[in-house]
Image 1 (cartoon, rainbow, N blue to C red):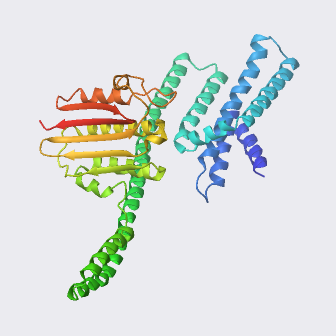
Image 2: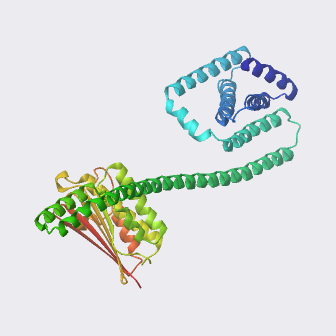
Length: 398
């Protein structure tokens, strides 16, 4: 029914406007808004129809120009050649697209947006305008030129506007995605704290009754039994108390800067989800950053990524745990990252292109040294010993 309606309106409008492309586009828009008025607009379908119209127009133009201008065919020969070429190219193209399923996925990712509808309509409008000038040879050259220039200027302004809108929405989507990830990480962190608090509350409630027995033993001066009882009670409490998480996320509260704290939290939780063992400690409050916040975040991200890469390439017998230690005092900040690693020459590790990952060109430590070269108060020390690679970053206050 939709196809019959399409052909009917196309034929009727073609008689009114005398342009097949314009008639086709008007029918596409009419049917699109007619069918989509009661549901969410499917711009993928609309853009697909518009691209199909552009592609079909180009095929018809090529099939007509090739036999007429190159092969010099006229009359019935031109008509038959035109239809054979159009059918052959269209059939071959459809057959190729059906085999290449990734083309449909690419089209869906790119054109499922109304932002791309307007440029497609503008391109079709340019073909209609060219068709109009072709069918009206009596128009003066200056009018044709001014019309084309005005249309191109309109397209340029529209393209800039669309690029701005697309960029702004892309940034908004990235911000929303980042916020969603942060919310998920914080929820996981809070759930862990809540579980530990509930476990401690239950044990503390029962511990009062268990300790009351020791008071009776003291009163009866049964010290031998008391010593044995307290030893067993201590062992029991250690087993039943919630074990300290290897991530020790509570130490993140020592870091005052929220961006740096969240970078560490997201990286540690990412490792925990992936089953990567690690230990994190920040023993003292870090209130002031010795260098620019973003440079410090870049340095820390490089150290963590380098540690994980080395751990993956290391011999399993050397262990798998990544140790992260942050020591802050009134003199500055020290960051130590230790990870299992295959045998590494420290001098080679600092060179561009070095990586412990096979087939991978690493730039991490090279970029790290470039960042630190701008700070006279920064010192990077790299060591390798007995299967462990350690990076020590010293940052003093100026």
